[in-house]
Image (cartoon, rainbow over all chains, first blue to last red; front, top):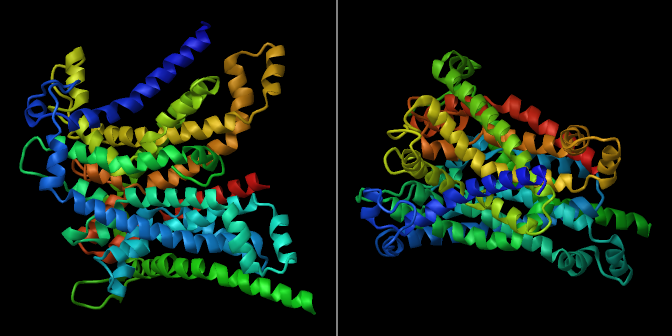
Length: 273
Length: 294
């Protein structure tokens, strides 16, 4: 083996190890007994292992409720953003009207405004509206970053659909709206699905808005629930890491489907880190 | 005549379809933002109406020692995270570039930190760095590097290093995969020509690879700077800005002023403090993206 190739494999192995260890630590901890964690026994391999931590989550914590709240919020805000964003993206790529470029620019700029800058202004607006402390607050708040994202992502997909197909439908007597619904949207279905799954992931993982806008314990979402996870038992890390593993599961499943789009999306600058 | 009505119809449909986006962004992005600018110029004491105070909130921020620490921490957190992400991301891309078998699979695994909820990542790193039972300290003692646990989150400097480490872990795979995607579009002929001239690997990297992917490097760096400068989750969960104010950054500080202390005028001013810089960065990204489109 050439020295350069050897060096490459060493670097790669180190990077894989660095990525792997924290994820391994989540899983290992989640299967440890309270005693093993408290006394640092069996630190690398949990043996004998237990599933008590997972059982605890469903029997003695509000984990199921947090999942429900996160699922409702993520699904509703995703659907809302897809409808609004798809209409906007079609308008910006296929129809010509004065001010189109300006709208395109505004969408891109709002996409880039970070939530860390927006959360206090947005919170004040929701207080003014008298609409905090409801899952509806989050369902309205998440599209502030999801709509620009969907619009920007779908503009790319719409551009890749040949105009001729749509024009053929117009010649056959379809209206513009019919051409969009029957020709363009079906062809953009993979893009819509990818955009929807991205939105779901972003909403599912969102923490800051959910932390600030929701005070009611029964309306907390999964990330906020996790961040406030405290039980009387000193070695609560077992339960917390079990919760962390389960919270990551849906987005990892979604990701298995998405990852080919991610590599494309990354180069288009459509997805940010 | 008919053509004209068609054009009018197209315009009308165009406006109708963009209207929901426009209304949404006007109501829940532009309005909050503009009213934040106004509120940052007022003072509000609970029980009394707000009154206009001009730039007083900004002045008191600039004079406060705590805000200066916050600004300095935000800069350190951002620059530290980005530099390390650039180095590891580049190493990852270069290492993966010539791997043919299993490339997709390895890339898939390496991107996982980027999809896992940030809250999970922050909690996991907090647990990894636990003084007595965390894996890092236990492993360091096992190997014999240290005799007793390192106070990762208790020492001011190490706490900053720790939140940067967690942030880098989350973010470098995105850098790596983006760089790799860009590297794979560089024509092989360039390398072949350089090889004929006797160029080595180091030379090829600086003369061919880096110049060819500099657009992607710039966009990724700018995007990441915007987000990191306004990060909240990792710091809030791992340290709450502590110990003292050692890891307090812009967003955790405006949280403290607004949500904890209800000093809205000051909180708005603190929220907007990084805006001039963020605005510049956004303009730079938009320009780069438009250039790539053309």
